[in-house]
Amino acid sequence: MSAQDDALEAAIFDLLAARGPGHTISAMDAARIVGGDHPDGWGPLMQPIRRIAVRLMKEGKLVITRKGRPVDPDDFRGVYRLSLPRDDQGAGKSESV
Image (cartoon, rainbow, N blue to C red; front, side, top):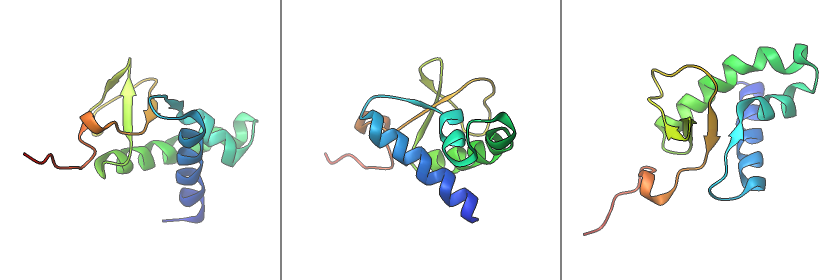
């Protein structure tokens, strides 16, 4: 992973921690933390941040939502939000019986 990817991932988790449980963030917000407020800075980071979000969702560390519902990380388009997984979203945890 590159230093830029590390910075984007850290920005995602920093924003999510600041918002608190049950809240979402925009990928653009995380890109702006790393690239600055001008579109020439954060715009090119949108594809890398999407790739990172997909990886984190597959690892169970993040949930990508569209219109309030989790998406298929391999097949989604349009505006999306990022959130931390809730216990009932099966963030890689197994239930004990």
